[in-house]
Picture 1 (cartoon, rainbow, N blue to C red):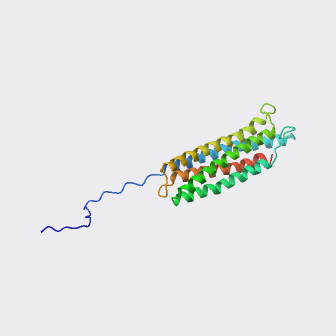
Picture 2: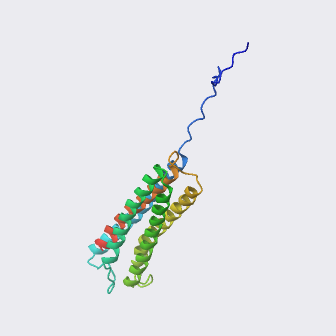
Picture 3: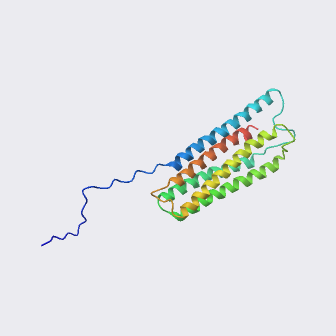
Length: 203
């Protein structure tokens, strides 16, 4: 008589588990973040050195008649700081497989980015500083414009990750993309704080 077993038999030779997937996206984001920090640090270093040299000669840094109000820069800082909290919400939500809250959080981060860009455009219109009016204007616009470009890149990153999350690529077991977008966004906000102090506060 043949014995019948309902239990699954374990083969003598087990197949090795697939190797852990390297976190290439997160590593690439970290390297891109480091490069972005180096770019803005160098640009701010040139800005501060040039500003110090001009002031040392007794000349006024900002051209006559140009005023940088603090209301808009401060609101831009508050907007970006709030976006950090929302990004933390997104990371926590995807860790719980709470997709609706993840989508809402990532969408709000993009809204905050748009609000920052709109406030910056309004601030530049209030400054009324022509790029050809003064030799220092291109440097001021270079610092502000570079950070705007970084914010645009961060928003594109968040948008792509949001779409991939919507498609089911990311969840509680694989949050690498959301982590990467969060890391680059945090770096973007930190760089604005440096621009906020160097350009808008010290003037």
